Amino acid sequence: MNSEISSERLLLNKVSLSDVDFIFELVNTPGWIRFIGDRNVKSNEDARILVERVIHNPNVDYWVVKAKNQRNSLGIISFVKRDYLEFFDLGFAFLPNHTRQGYAREAAVAFLRHSIKDYPYPNILATTVKDNIDSIALLKKLGFRFDREIEADNEQLFLYSISIDKCLIDVLVTSFFAAFSNIDSRKPDLQILNELCLPEVMIIKKSGAQEEIYNLQTFVEPRKKILTDGSLTNFTERETHEETKITGGLAQRFSAYQKSGQQNGVPFKQNGTKLFQFVKSKQVWKISSVIWEDHQV
Image (cartoon, rainbow, N blue to C red; front, side):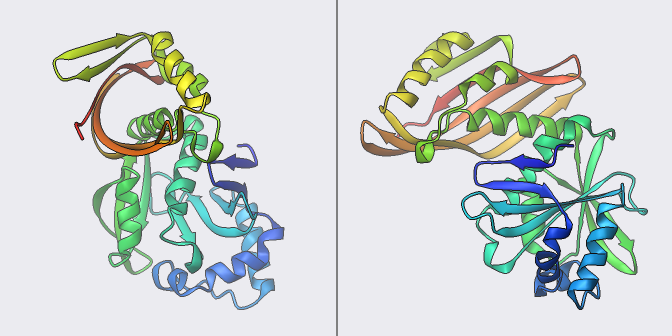
């Protein structure tokens, strides 16, 4: 894996000895001790030993999450092959001042987008104690589903799982929505649609009794214009709910979304629904069709 992962607000780097002070602080926070466990890290030397163990263990990855704007360390994403689990376990922990700001979800999505293409197993797992409500809520937002209750190290844990196919489709849809964003003067990445979609993708806009049917080129060209000429600014679009059905190499996803921005200087916010269809082509999921309908304001 590359040594750095980037998202809109964050940078992720593999843990190194330069992170010892941060790791010492993190593993001694009340949240870590309560929900993950006391690692008996009582000094910077203990933290250095912990970091060295992680660095040299091929079954453990710690990625330190930093804010792009200040480069301060916020938390970690972990990816661990535990003896008592069949597949790798995704985890996350953040300093108290950096929770409830969407960092953990953004970092986890960035990590999964970066890593799962080379992941050799059919599922990713996650474990949490029963009363870690925030962790459970985040796992559900990431598409994980409750599997069963297990016991490990004399502790009862909830086990969650997600299939790699579902995870890849989640990443695909997230990338589709993000491609149009020009919030905070960001340049929209419409070129990525060529990677996400089949060349023959069909895109349909439903408006009442009317339909507008596009291919990829006729869909992108007018949107590129308004997203770059100042007509549509601070635009962002995100999925608020989804239902996905996967059967072999075919998949379908119902997606509720919300979009907002400023059109010709006038702020707006609107909800709608999209229906995605996917096909697995040469072991890679691609969007084969998209139908969307904006809800009437």
